[in-house]
Length: 205
Length: 205
DNA sequence: CAACTTTGTTTCGTAAAGGAAACTCTTTTC
DNA sequence: GAAAAGAGTTTCCTTTACGAAACAAAGTTG
Image (cartoon, rainbow over all chains, first blue to last red; front, side):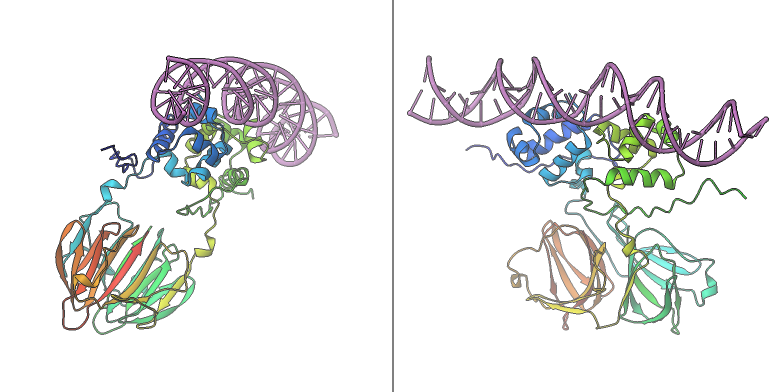
């Protein structure tokens, strides 16, 4: 039986999360991508509009392509720039899973919020979920707006609260209500129910 | 009073996830970055090792830099590649917000799930949140594993359910429990309580 | 086996990148 | 107000990218 020509490209190579450009990686990386797709230089040439010879030289580091050539590469191969320079670091995150039982999260209290971090076994997640009890009772409990990169979603699990934000009128939210907002906009929460409100919060950067 | 030579660099550079390269943006983008930092061509020249003249030509689109020149740019200016090419195309997402009242989401029923999509006013979100009532009652209600790119987080709001996944033993989850998992791994849910279980689901790609 | 195709590499000419130094134009300095 | 310094642009020249075409090495076909 012949070997399957289209093998999965499981490259367990670890790279740092921000993936700074390594000087001489490009040729090797391009060849990897080409071979893992079972493409010939000619095929890549047609896809990208670059000459076979040029591609060969790039792969062998005999030439530093111009920016427009790099553009043709990314466009023709259907990949984006970061992919060209850093390897896929997905395999480590493949198929992972983390269950957090009720009340079994990792406590993280602050002056105004009582957070319970969820799924803390996993690192490098796209989202950070946590349950929070809102201890704050008035606007003045905060020194300043809370502002940070990314987007946030929150759902009121119990009680009610007031959602203050920098660019909107305050809004009262009740159990079952939810908000999605840009976290770089100043925001803060204040419980309005007898019991401190509890919410589910998910952050993505 | 002399003007402060070091103005705040609010360049709101959003690195979109796909960030396709626009052909002629690079020069403009580079000038934006340089001016927002109050750098002269000479300063950038020293930082990057590229000649003043070369930088001038790049900014005026009289020259398409080689890849090695681009590397010197990103390294010298302390920015990463996506920042150089994707212009700030996201100011529209700045400070936005969407409130979804209880039960007021957008219904989206399927054979096995009854979804209620949240925050549907916003597009191009990092996360997609929705509440779901799990109608499925047995494993065989599904034709095949559900698999898609990205990561998912779910919290059981009411009832209980069984979380089946491709690489793990089935796990029963009760109200308040949560799971975070790689969505490319096959997964499916089955209600186990008398009432169909309700969950909060958040997806990120 | 020879003829042919398909692969990647190398050669060579041309067009373009990129540095040194000239040139403008504006802003300081005395 | 002239001289000097600092900004960006343009010119000139060397190096380099890159395509056409030749080459070499491998597998196909008859």
